Image 1 (tube, rainbow, N blue to C red):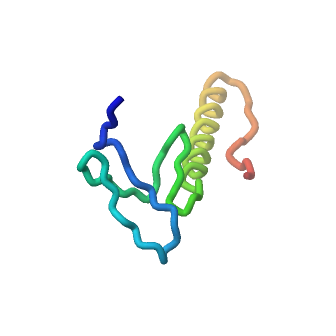
Image 2 (cartoon, rainbow, N blue to C red; image 1 turned 90 degrees about the vertical axis):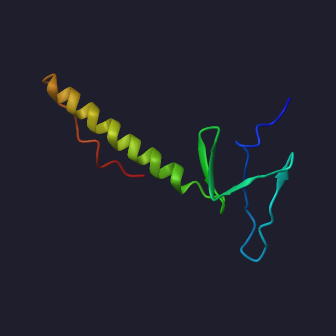
Length: 86
């Protein structure tokens, strides 16, 4: 099995005191990134998942507004779900 080196990236997770070296695969320099999405989870170089949680929060607010709008269009009453606390 061969790797597609154009899709490969390097995510450095070390501290700022460690130099970020370049990595090569099959003679191609691999791109560096600050965050990457893998298996549906976005992880940043400081190993935090803030971006992923912001995306999930935005999606849940959007879906709750659509649900509220659609149910009010049908004449049904729905409680306000925009004020959900995390």
